Image 1 (cartoon, helix red, strand yellow):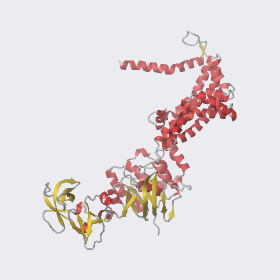
Image 2: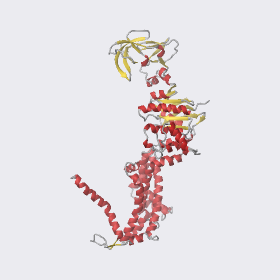
Image 3: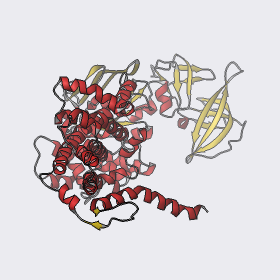
Image 4: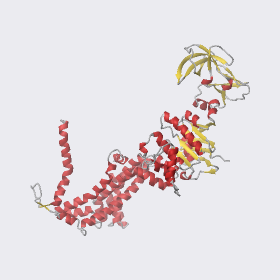
Length: 267
Length: 351
């Protein structure tokens, strides 16, 4: 009984997982698709032509989103790694409180935090600016990096660094040649997470960017309110591509028993 | 000439816990000194202080007369091998061995030739392009040693480098380490908890217990003239009798032992090694009566457990005799145990 049900459940699961993609692809290339037709009446690439127009909003959105996501990914990975290392490898006073503070943005509703920082950002002239958006995106991304990197560093043997020092290597060389190559899987996964979170962030960008900083989700949302469904479909497909490319290069670190994945167990 | 390594009055506390209590030790160039002791005695901490990986609470470290206290670990002219081989996983064996040369400010020429030469020395020729995971434990540890020796050090620090290896390999590796030490003319500090290993490899042994240097001597002295009861016990002496000395006679609870005439020993404990005693059927001079309790094989030798009646006629003292001759060791048999006064040792610090 169990054996016969298994393929059915698996089929349903795959359908549930991939059906939205199929429908988006069909939306992006179909025209005149009305209920109750199973498939569009005709097909055209009009949506993609508009999406890839170099002077169009989507290309501009891609550029803005990419710049922000790369900056956020990099900064969050650097800061989060330092904090993750501290949590995993050192004992210090108020460590529990520090851990809680670092992870708090995951528990506290993002909107509440955003309202708070918006006031601050306006005061310091950071609202409506790209820098402001980058700073705001660090709030939900750093906790993930801290978790991943504390898992990575919990499995890191500090003796490797000591071995490097007794061989005459400076701290910088130890970091570059010994530590980084060992923790690179964690760094790659951290960057992936931070990038993807920043890439799909909408509320924080809208509130802090004030509509001046137009990332791809903002552009996508404005199309969604219009009724040009092929364009929405094409834009959605474009929206999915960069994270998928990044996933292609980091996926090897996401599977199996790599230390970077064990850190996620703390979520 | 000043000693290659001079450890002067080193103390170390971790919070309330005092792990090193005023250690003084000199290691000359060309000397291999083992720091021996059971786990938790502070031996690894002492080595880490010499290396600069740990700061001493007080005291000083000198290399060849130069004070090292403020010199960071990477600038000390030492080489160190840890318990684990710690080969850098992202590098090949060749890159691992070349690490110290490439990390140096002035990268020397012919690194490849030097690596080749060093790998030949540790009997791993042609291993340059292998990865760390492809090697056995012993091979990894030899690479680790090669990597350390690339610095051409005057001081070699070894932190239980053999304890992760299996027994046969350990024996092979310790003579290998001795060979390497001799060919490099270094001052070597070798930390171990294995008494046999320390005896086999060292010129001198520094025996530590609870953060105190109990005795610093040549290996044979630890057997023949232990300074304290702890040392005697650690080095396998099973017969340590309490008592007192008057006129070259050591009075224990069960027997008055004759000491050698010129002995001016002072102390309240007597060490009589089990292998120096002999079981006889008749009384001779320098023997005392006892009864056999049991016997068992101890390796290829036989350990006989006996007991001697104390002079209070009530209590008994256990006496162990190790022999290589099989005889009638049946329980309750009355025998005499003979000793050689020149092989008895009065322990100065009998506690």
